[in-house]
Image (cartoon, rainbow, N blue to C red; front, side, top):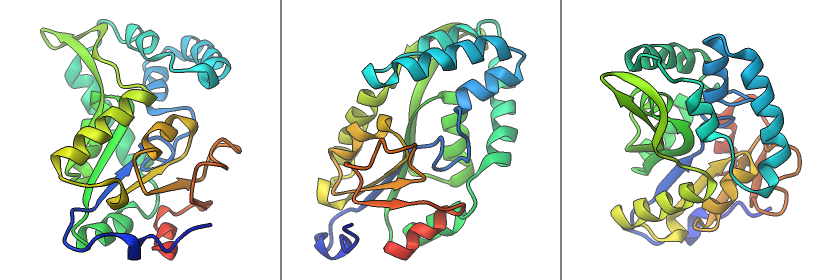
Length: 224
């Protein structure tokens, strides 16, 4: 376990911490996108899609387009309203304390996720993050069409991280990624430190420098 990474960072350079959302900033297991659609009455469809996703996920990204189709005809404002209540109820214990620490250290803070815009932008606003990027739904006259204008899968997350590093002038040694599943591994390749928070099974055993298993995400502070 390597924890003494702070001393290796270059003074006077920008430092960045990037969070995954599901299982990290939010205490959810199945996924925010799926749970919100299930709330809208599509429980059977979500159960079937989740079963198929578990079967496919080790082989590559799958499922975002299929999820988007289940929202065809749903009002955009309604989705954002649901997302606000959903996020409020599921914020990971200790998030405010952890973000306060990074804010005091003047870290750039962001979230990169496959989740849809209505979840990701709600997170950004609620937690006052510097940036938050996710999958973009297509809307026509304020209604979801069931299509995507931008799909952010595990590899897209890594591409966005590189763009943000360039934008904020961060090198890999100045970046911390906090994730919980194999979909965060591509991002970890561009960060000096990858912290696995309550990692799913043993998916991250060989990737994360540090693994934290706790009901409170601020316990990450114990290794900073």
